[in-house]
Image: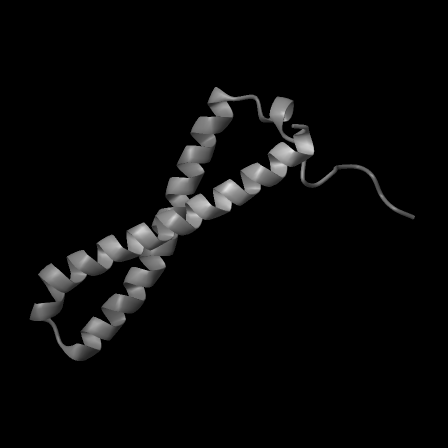
Length: 93
């Protein structure tokens, strides 16, 4: 496989991983909220809680993705295996 194929496969895999982590965070936070917090608060507060859970799941997946990507960048030389997505310095006239 060449660098372009590696890049496409990496982007697809990273996207699927990010979606999986987001759904996992969402399910875990909803379960924790529904079990321990929701029975003790009002319906309006529950609605706000679920909205905040959605935002927290996205933030949690973002930070997990970033941490894993930093780890992989230290472990592997990305320039050796992947083609850059955006090129620098070349302008089309």
